[in-house]
Amino acid sequence: MELWFTEWQTKNVGLTCRVKETLFMGKSEYQDIAVVDSQEFGRMLVLDGVFQTSVFDEFIYHEMIAHVPLFTHPTPQQILIIGGGDGGTLREVVKHTSVKQAEMVEIDGMVVEVCKKHLPEISVELNGNNPKVQLTIGDGIRHMKQANNKYDVIIVDCSDPIGPGEGLFTPEFYQDVYQALKEDGLFVQQTESPFYHQALLKRLAKDIRRLFPITNVYLAPIPLYPGGLHCFTMGSKKYSPIQVDTPVPPFATRYYNQQIHKSSFMLPNFIQDLLI
Ligand code: SAM
Image (tube, rainbow, N blue to C red; front, side, top):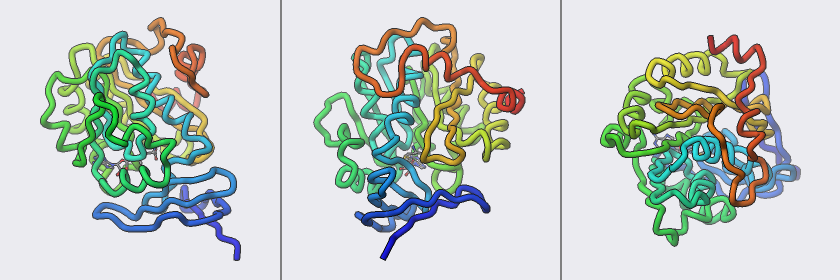
């Protein structure tokens, strides 16, 4: 019998993948968790029926959410990742030799354990062997309230704004992020599809701009995500991601490079209009 899995991206549109095998299916305190092996995308993490990452295209998302902020800051040393339970963002962050400590606060310990077992190439830095990595299983919203003037870069690698991730898309959370950053700090968050989540993108840009003098949206093509084009929103206290002279990455990358860094901030008119 053929197996297919559909993520309903809107009420009317779905992405359907032929599945070879279901490797894990379970329920944590927070969400339904599955790992399936698919024909086109390889192994994929699915939370509450939503595709989170796949071995086929994860490099684009993880390089872009990590290297754009870390190459914008001249000396990123103290890094915080909120969410990111698959470990892909952490794997990219620790490639930067300036990083002294990479903290990750993920609410769902089961996501971490499942990814360690079934997505080892993505979760490689979650194995406990890197002294720079500090993993906490806890709520990122609560964690943010306790930090003050501590981080150079904060990366919000969250799931959709429903369930445990809902509070990560609020003005109160951004105020706490601002407080937790050093005076030249910056943060980035994945902010969904420019086709299907326009109201959200507009609201977040407004909320972030109210606090951060430099606020920019950048884009990356991600086949697994709704609409195939994904937004990231950056709030920065001092450094402009467009004006900085970014270095040639001193490690191999598959998507990110100096030209992509700058060009990812060049927005088509319909997105510029949303952000006014
Ligand atoms: N790249 C993915 C995407 O854009 O769909 C997101 C990857 S990562 C798996 C998202 C993680 O955020 C999940 O593991 C989820 O448990 C975690 N998360 C959601 N709400 C959270 C919160 N309040 N604090 C910390 N982690 C949270």
